[in-house]
Image 1 (spheres, rainbow, N blue to C red):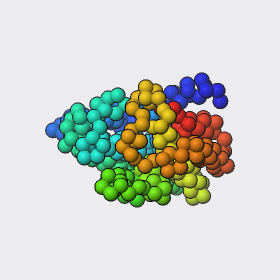
Image 2 (cartoon, helix red, strand yellow):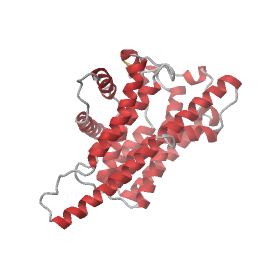
Image 3 (tube, helix red, strand yellow):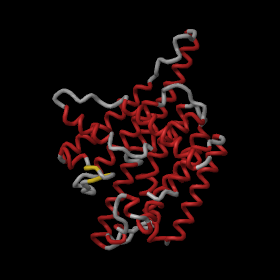
Image 4 (tube, rainbow, N blue to C red):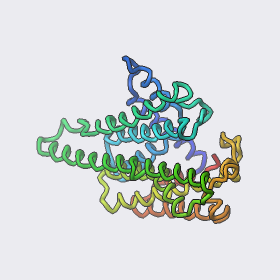
Length: 320
């Protein structure tokens, strides 16, 4: 696929995802109006919409039909957004800007920032539960067929919901964030350096976990086998680790204008990264190896999807 064609298709698909997410935005009314405004402000801050896009692509690649995946697409973006809202808080990274826009807490205050994140996390599961089950395509079926189809959809939705909760929780993203905070504190207090094992744990849980949730849930909702879902978990692990290593690389060699943020901050803060532990050239080689392996897993498991393959490579070889 030519780069121009890929970029046009990516823009089209991302716009479609954006419209799906907007369908699940809460109405800004009542005595809780302020927190609802803060939640919507956070969700509409832009971004790649990578996780819902991956979920949708995997769903269709495995032969998924209908709209059952849509509540989960909105839900995973809500979870990702809440994590960013909380990351930006004064108690965490204390960031006043993200993507050139004021962060939620800097607009609404840190208390409302906490509540907006909490609200998005809870809304995510309220939204995902709307997939239990959708009534589409059921009216023309016989009673026995309808019962069988509804039962199958409910079982798949329940499995997908379990994956979403587990990958977002203390065994996933929150666990990775905890390890990251404690590692930074240890470096500041004692100068003790983080090990490669610890760093990979942080990257796997903080970054890769939600990518795994997206790809696994998409496969489950499409009716993929346990073996196929496990393959998507491994594929997503590679994507997440490569994505994070590329972040570390760009902090060394990236262009601040292109990235939209200053480079070299990790070095200035004496922060241990994949690059500081393994060197720039080996880090680049590992990004290439992990990315190519992810594409190979995808192709062997689900068949050829040129757009998805190019999306994976564009994410892990990005310049910003």
